[in-house]
Length: 533
Image 1 (cartoon, helix red, strand yellow):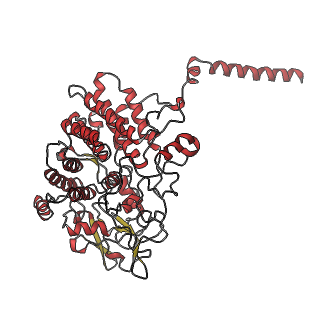
Image 2 (tube, rainbow, N blue to C red):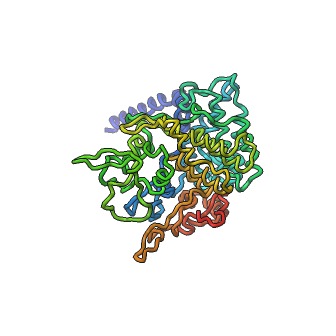
């Protein structure tokens, strides 16, 4: 027995030894030192395409779409921005760091050498675009100490002012580095401009214009410098300059905004929408009162016809549902407008930035007296024209076409002329309200424009008491006001406590349920006299 046991033990040891000899091969030992979480191989074209697609303005927040009074709902629980019943949809996220920023940093690290200056600059433009959207939602965030990995697991929160100045400086450096004699921006892998360096520069300078105007009420002189620099560099002015991403009605390639709306509310024409949503009266009434030719493009009433419904997009039939006014399904629910099938086309594009926004920013800048090479009136008129022209990018669907005749645009401007004789506030209201219409769907940017400019003025007191008095929806969690910020991620309280507490104290709030998310961004200087926004 002893001999048998010895043989077995020896054989087992030999097997272990042989196995160990095999595992000690040079390649195997090298593999032990490879970080399984690090990217060791990167296809730059593919990564850039992914980053560009990831740069489109994010999936609509139901809370923002309702709070900005594009949409309304009769149901209580999903009415986060209609009745402000809860804080759903108002929590910020730091996903930008491990998603878009990480992707772009990895890509930029691979783009070495003078021939890659244009590619690297385009990545910087996308990086600034992504971050400004997040800081405009939450305010102070880690910036200078962000993305340092194990070197710094508890980064400080930079002030929004310092973030803005850093973003503008970095954007300027990137745009100044672009060189038309060098390789283009990823060629056909660039879904925006197919590598066109000149168009990328217009994109970047329009972003600079946006950031400059955002801070124009709090840092007037600095804003003027950056706005005039952007205009000198050249901003988007032509239809061909529009930065947009094409989607297709094919699984895995659909428009994410529309998919969200289609799945969540408007998955069948007529009847009871899942979340009880319709276009809001504020939005529809404004389009009707100005006889806006975009109304039949984006809106439809589904009329019962036997066992089915038929679409009607005539202007007279369009009717919005009053925000925060009801909490049970109205008997006339079918008579309210909802997004057209053109608007809900899963193959429709998403515009990231274009001349409609650029011209309206120029109108605002001219109104402030900045040297931008145009009058406020001329820029406003061009903004309206560009805003209507961009709907031609949408595929014609059923009775809806996005092609708006020039005569219809001219008639609109004649009936709704720029208020040259109005006060500065009246002109600003006209410009900001046109942005609200022209940038439909880009909730991030419209939300920021509304907070900065204080227009349009929305009425949140639409609930009728037995006495007939109108008040904000009973039980709302915001004191009947639209929130002015999103909360910082709550897990930051535990993992980066000191810096988190410093940031929220610096910005005048302690918890989303304490200040009702009414703390303001650095550039949101407060309401004008007599305003409630």
